[in-house]
Length: 225
Ligand SMILES: C[S@@+](CC[C@H](N)C(=O)[O-])C[C@H]1O[C@@H](n2cnc3c(N)ncnc32)[C@H](O)[C@@H]1O
Image (tube, rainbow, N blue to C red):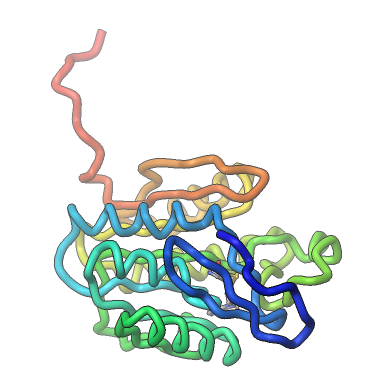
């Protein structure tokens, strides 16, 4: 990804993200090129998923979900709390020619109870509150994940539990392996058919986690010792 205009407070900037023209400004999080892997991973998982649209939680300017939708051909629903981010997501989808249903609001409030998605991609704020001062250029709502950094990570899992189609997949971004332990703890407290299937550690940038049903884990025919 290259930023094609110099940073200018309040001005619209453009980033190339996997061939997409992504507009953003300093009121939203700057697109990070490494997160293209998250969008591509989600698209790959649609190959083994039931039919239906993709859901992107915490979409920001929308680039991760747009990459998934373009690669998979699936319809796309995107959610962000911040009206500025939602406006950029709508603009970026329109420019890409990808129909996206962008909803502005808290992820726990903008989905109908009966809506199900085979693949969900989620990039929540994950910095512990005590660490946000180190990133003064980033908007607080985009990075502050609460005391342990996991408030919005837990919300994404809760939303996935309610809105994943049976057999569906969640590709979740967290900050580090300590937060991965909290992901596993939250899943075990919820006692649901969702488990960590694969982890891609891309620290210091972040950690990508694939969650899916227990039935996705191949059962070995080997007998024990
Ligand atoms: C880490 S940023 C990710 C943005 C984008 N995916 C990216 O890579 O640039 C997290 C996003 O979550 C949004 N957000 C924070 N709390 C939220 C909530 N309760 N429901 C939905 N979105 C939320 C923020 O506005 C922000 O755009």
